[in-house]
Amino acid sequence: MEGKELKQKRESLGLTQTELAEILGVKMNTVYRWESGILDVPKSIELAMETVERNHKKSKST
Image (tube, rainbow, N blue to C red; front, side, top):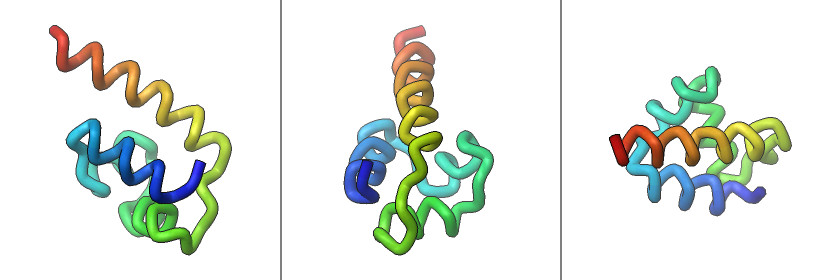
């Protein structure tokens, strides 16, 4: 996953960088660096985003 895709997913979920960072257990600066392409998005974060998306959709539907 590239940073642009992570940003699109985060925005489609209506989350700020700070909110996503809290969910993922990282600092907001790390999310910024991933989205900006300064750091590569780790595979573990790709997998975690799948869970975030599923859980976020469930919480919106209830």
